[in-house]
Length: 308
Image (tube, rainbow, N blue to C red; front, side, top):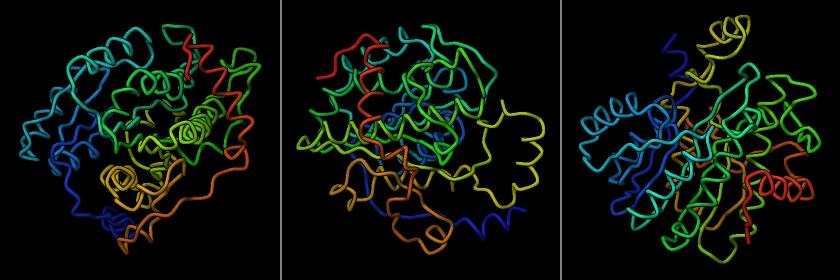
């Protein structure tokens, strides 16, 4: 089983170093976030693991320090379902860090039963979109001062599953775990495009990506039939290491300095051939600039922020 997966999914490689650079990765204690942290730590970056569960984060931090030989890895508390936690984390970073060169908005939840965040937002939209939107807003001045810098939003091909329901953004009238997840991932791509436009001329670039179908803890909330289906097809899915490759590419590939706002995906053949990843096709809804602007305004309104 592993050999089939290894054959179909290689590993992108690059010799780019990140010495004297600081990286923040949300959800870095597990899955593709952890493998992204491992790779960037090996490249010499200072890695800040922003995690909800500090006990798991600390265990992962020790493993990554030992594995990478990089002692410059720290873990800090960040609960994306609570704006107080997001603000506390950002305040700590703004006070203690002299730079943030790469922000990777990686953490996410998928197809969970209906629930709300501490601030009353539907959980998937709240964590996957609004939490990262607020975090980026709060760190943006520091990121701009650290330019050239990059912001990377881990989205998904699942953005095709949903639409943005401006009049029922918290899915209170009708809830489908699948559609709500799709809406949150569509929001990631739309806001990546909007942010890229706002950051033109700042030397801060923004990317969204689909990591591929990865065997990770993200599937813990899906239905039993879906879990069985994922197990059946698991030989043809990516490992967490392989799933992290598109994020790593967006973080380190020098050629991407000239691009911003795109949606990326490293396909199986790209990984096998170690080729560069080109922008991937996303849905028509993900290219809707008018909807992107409306979503941006609504997100600011919901979070009580003014984004100049």
